Amino acid sequence: MTTPATNPHPKDPTTGNAGNPRAGDPRTTDAGDPTAAGEPRTTTAGDPTTGEPYATDPRTGEPRTTDAGDPHAPGPTTGAPTTTNPTTTNPTATDPRLHTPATTWAARTDTARRRLTTGDLGPLPVVIALAVIAIVFQSITHHFLQADNLTNITRFIAGPGLIAVGVVLVLILGEIDLSLGSVAGATSAIAAVLAVHQGWPEWLAITTALTAACAMGTLHGLLFARVGVPAFVVTLAGMLAWNGLQQWVLGDTGTINNHHNGIIAHLDTTFLGNGDTAYAWTLAILAPTLHLLTQLHTTRRRTAAGLPTRPLTHTLLRTTALAIPALATAYTLNQDRGLPLSLVILLTTILTTDLLLRRTPYGRHIYALGGNTEAARRAGINTTLTRTTTFLLSSLLAGLGGLFYASQQGTTDKQLGTGNTLMMAIAAAVIGGTSLFGGHGNAWTALLGILVIQTITTGLDMIHATQAIQYMITGTILLTAVTLDSLTRHTHPQHH
Image: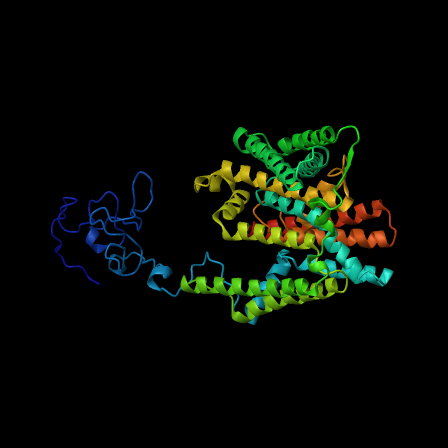
């Protein structure tokens, strides 16, 4: 294009310059624009004090964009390149920052290959490990997979599983809580003393004990979040203090038997419907049905928002993958005594925690703090409140787990919550897939991890292996899980 010898532009009232209104403007200089009297020009127009582009044109008040067709954007007539925003010029274009589910089998294969090379395998290694453990012990004992043995496994995971869910919350936050075992022991001791020695109604004793557990967690959270004492030190002190409280509450006897027909005693011994098979089948059908409805609802919402969605076949495959083990579990439980109450409480707690983490702003705040504390603070998240309530919830879950331990033992004693209780809960969370580095994991990892540990424990007990062997095997699995987590973090950091 050629430029006339005379400048046809009238005098610009905002700059006082005749001719080209951009000439003399200190915010822009023209490079390659023949109307600019040969002066150099850059394509960045912005505040000279910050260098940031103006959100609106300072002369017209209109929004300034770099889309083609913007009269204020540099274009071909000025010799400057035109930058096009695909999300505005093409409404069907996808923001590259958004997660785009694979929609073809080739894309899914490529995604699976990439996850395999980076170590981001999700729950697959844990599921495979469970299958291998079951096959090995079945081949050795020939009765590991009997219904009564598998039913006992589902009962025994309730106590440590609930504590592991609390560990998951704290790990996602990017911290550690060493006091949860002692909180479990102190909670069970308070409930037992109030119900048995003081004659309180058992429901009131349990409520008071769980309230005390919440107070312990709140104290940890406030000292960490508001005072600034490291969580490791705060919870280490709590581990010692609450263990001392447990021993002081129990007194010289050190052991209190549960009420024979009380609430705590029934936590571990109750089977819904006294063995009625309908309960297990209902739960096995309800779980995948709710999963399918939730996924379909999510798909509708994403479609309405113009976001990419998973294909229906993918959703159906995931639902089928959940339905098969659910129905198999229901069949196995019904071969023995039916659906244990302890398993129902554990699954309900995990589901509620999962919904809290994935479907509420509070849950997203926990992930944000675990991913980057400073970024979360600058985004306006109340870090003190989020941290304090997270420690509160973890202690509440630990206290509930302590009541299940007392139910399984039939008594509350000074050893409850000590030993390897805390280590097994932390190992369960990490083995299941929760990252030690924060910002990554979910509540279901607690279930997978505690299933691995309890399966190993039960199998080794059946072959009369020593506890030393159990510790070495569990430690090896834990180290493997943390190593995979570290490799994933280094090779695929966006997942953390």
